[in-house]
Amino acid sequence: MYRVNNNDFKILSKYKSFLEELDDALENVPRKDMYFKDKIRDVSYDLLYLIIRCSYESNSEELIKMESDIKTHISLLDFFIERLFTKKYLSEKKAYKIGGFLVEINKMVNGFINNKVKDVS
Image: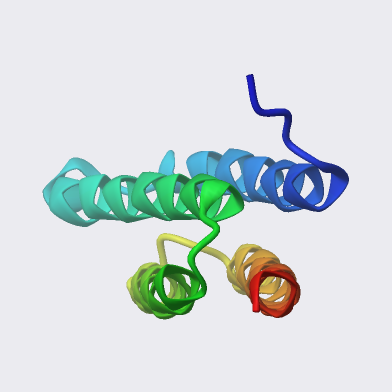
């Protein structure tokens, strides 16, 4: 069985912290915005899938494609978080904290994929 190396584990542990923070934040979303609450969860789990998948990928073209998919998912999450803040479901502090997690995850994934593409080439 494939063992996840330290770089992968750091990204996944950071993403786990992000998911815990996001779940706490989504508790304040009322039923009338259940669609966006579900959409945020779906996009966040899709992003988790992409992060795990890129750790197993060895084709550099696929890695570059996944990088754009990951950036797209992060942008979607950022949009949804901004919407929750605008609707006053999230405090400014909580929105910045979640946004900070997204920025860190984005940097970590970009660095990981760039290093992996160099190794494959």
